[in-house]
Length: 355
Ligand SMILES: NC(=O)c1ccc[n+]([C@@H]2O[C@H](COP(=O)([O-])OP(=O)(O)OC[C@H]3O[C@@H](n4cnc5c(N)ncnc54)[C@H](O)[C@@H]3O)[C@@H](O)[C@H]2O)c1
Ligand SMILES: O=C(O)C(=O)C[C@@H](O)[C@H](O)[C@H](O)COP(=O)(O)O
Ligand SMILES: [Zn+2]
Image (tube, rainbow, N blue to C red; front, side, top):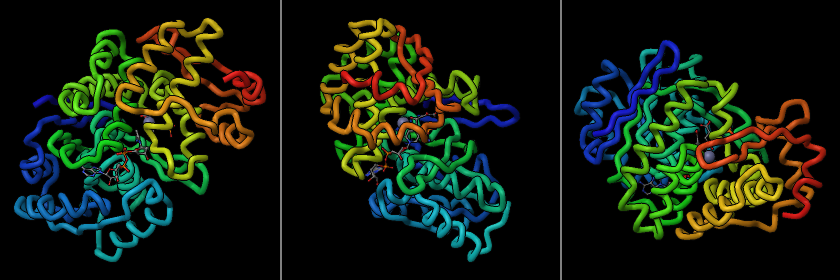
């Protein structure tokens, strides 16, 4: 068992990484919560696989469980779905003594986090991370979000969970494409963290390699992310680095209308920005093939026709690192040395013209 403790202000919680966690859910939840009602939120892919057993374990530990299932996929990250879930909690008499457990990937974690943070102005929250994205990134740090129309993660909160359970056993049922999308966030984190972690990703040459090393990748990625979040929970400074690849990536993700997963779009965003920054002497030239080799080894896309289109530039305005018309782009001066490169939004079309 690897335990990473995330200490933010007056609140601290554990991220527990172990391939037996899926059998210990009742005990682990009971160790942090006394008896209460639990809204167990999952999606239509994870539910049929794990909802019944998770419910059984929580009930055996003395909890009353309200299972709530939403359609799988990014479209469930909406105010409508969040509102429907909160209405269900109200109908079932949930109070501030009750809690929300997210059982799923990043979509369920982000959505259930919104529900937990808004219902009665905040009730307790636990994440059981079942996808690689959730196990290396989204379950930790307290960013919750839904999308509004064409804008990604535009409504949300910073709201930390009481516990995160990570168990690579769940990945056995995760389809390859969803696994690989999560791996893009691993490459992002490794490039930010430094050469030791980045060199490790250089040894991942196939999808089976990701599965073999998932636990080690998760432990390293979460340790790095936890340290960043503890230093800057609300993204006033260094937490912006975790957005490497996301400014361009989120724009592409939205314009692809579901054809690209989040991690795939982030992979494209990391590559496009690094190529451009290398040309300006901000990023080292050899970082371009190093990133490209890690991403393409597992089949991640590295470019898109959507980059540089007028619609693409229109989307950049909604990035949370846009301050009064200046975009704070995250680039790498070296592996392990992220830097902020401010660019006027109005200068972006010319800046990216040659990509
Ligand atoms: N809050 C954060 O810090 C943060 C960080 C990274 C990504 N995100 C968000 O996370 C989302 C992407 O996360 P994701 O890749 O987990 O997507 P996802 O939650 O949609 O999961 C991907 C697919 O895998 C399925 N799935 C999940 N676990 C499974 C399992 N064990 N077995 C079988 N199927 C399983 C899901 O049903 C879905 O179809 C995006 O919305 C992104 O914006 C948030
Ligand atoms: O935790 C963070 O901080 C991140 O930026 C992690 C990202 O991987 C994640 O996709 C996040 O949701 C993006 O946040 P946003 O603030 O750009 O919506
Ligand atoms: Zn991300």
